[in-house]
Image (cartoon, rainbow over all chains, first blue to last red; front, top):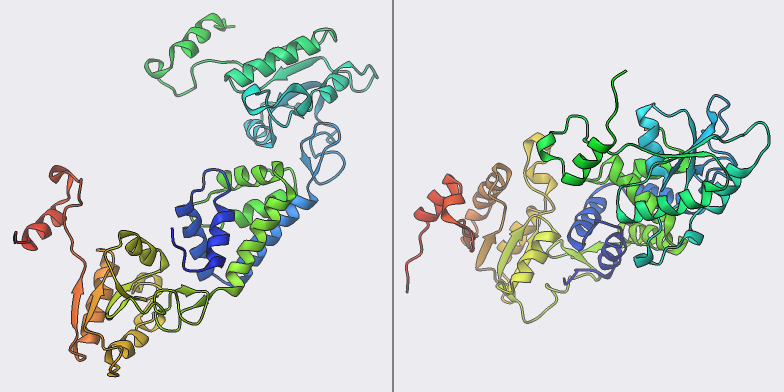
Length: 204
Length: 204
């Protein structure tokens, strides 16, 4: 497209590098900012740079944190004997929102994907193994829950982690796969439906 | 949501002030930037601030411009006798992309909308009237094409502009309304279909 100014072209170019934002949307956002107070653009730019340059990660679980330990790892009320392994911060937020998990997390920072050139060494796997294998009295890990997406990459990562954690002797589990609550049986795909029968749960 | 860090919360807050971007999308974009090089966030922030603080507008048509006059107004090959009135820069880009218009533009900068408190005095209407009424030999305007959306606000603005321009004696026209090319008659709404019959075009 033939942009009316180099400044607009630069801004559209940078904004459209974000995932899911094309040139048209980027132009809409740029023109929106042009109509608003200058302060809004400055605050946006400042928040982005601050976030990128000052964000630190929890030394224990690798979640984003304001301090050395994140709010969850530093909370004495959390159950340190269960670790839930997730891909990124969004998964932590999603599970926290359910209020069903009181243990700690371990953020892998990605998922094993040979196609994208991401191998086990690019992820926070060694530190997970150390956490699980450490034998001091206070932080004895008893169970590791793998909360990964049921995709090929997720299954590959889960398989790799199971092998890595086997020697430690801790229980390794995965979140349940099944028909979503509120979902209609008719519309569930065959694999999900099949798995939900195999993993059926007995009434108490 | 309970964000893991104040920096993330600030960034999500600022990003989600953009139109069409909610908190979830903002978080996705923020986490994306965190995974990329620091330079990408800096370039994005810089491009936004540069655009907002340094963008200038054409003194003639009010389109975004790098110089005093925009590329279109300063192009001697454009036909200065026809002015196409549009709401914003996106409309200029859309019409330019058709290669069907060789005249000049006039960017209103908005549309009359009593609900949003936007009246004629908030738009670049006086300067349009001056452009049309000026009687020097070189830039004699012969026709004004109103290219506004067929909404209530667009029709209100078109009606207001017609009245304002009547005394000047120039021809005022509007872009054609009708069934879109490639569109199926069956799916055209009644008003569009009705208008396409009233405004039918005779074969040569």
